Length: 332
Image 1 (spheres, rainbow, N blue to C red):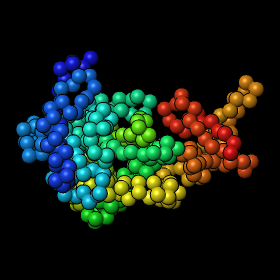
Image 2 (cartoon, helix red, strand yellow; image 1 turned 90 degrees about the horizontal axis):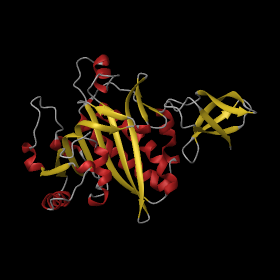
Image 3 (tube, rainbow, N blue to C red; image 1 turned 180 degrees about the horizontal axis):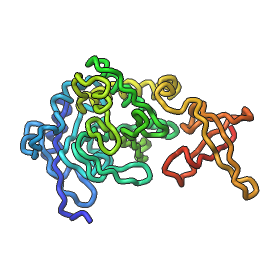
């Protein structure tokens, strides 16, 4: 049980005077930001960040390095940083209306991160863990946002590698919301939304293992394997590149739909022409059929073709942790 006297420190930081004013207003209005479980929240401005206990090993998030790398109009320009936090998702989802749209919360150590099916992730140092906010009006495309986010993460890693002359780290998307490197999971995306005053308030959470080789692998381990002499990737630079890519992709997505990103998405995911087994009950017998994945349907499920040339939409049956076990199909 968490004690009801749990406390956390949040440092508020803005790209320009506009966001800095918001930070000051939130700080002066003492109870402006809330967390679940009656957690006591202490707010600090960036100039006071040194009062927030920094670890001696100097690997806490570098606010100015991040802010200097941000070139966006909306996303990532207002940042909340905490050395330790139950979950970045709680910060943005519980305070959605108090924060400018596009605000991001980052932490160095996350105690109760959330995964799909309510799995709790204890996220150690060396992971880039962040959540940010966005607003949407069309509920039909909300489920596709996680694909835009996944793509922005993989493109951000490419962008930083390109810029620094590093070899290319091939992060792939495992549908619907995991990131893989050399067959091992290195990250995941979680989107939640609530509907208020005719808008969907979407909170997006991302975890990406940049520097911690346990329990699977991380980006820098792959980089060291390929190029022992190169410097390492920094969380701050990846996050800056992420918002640059995401803002561009999100604008395209809102303007032209997911079709505009589909080709790039299919180049980055693991599933083109993948053959999967779907199970169906036919008169109390479970029949297995093999289908071949072609892409996504307009509602964001998997599009597949059967050996009978019939097109199907594949849905997870909800019982299985791995989406590719227990798929069910529907003719389209």
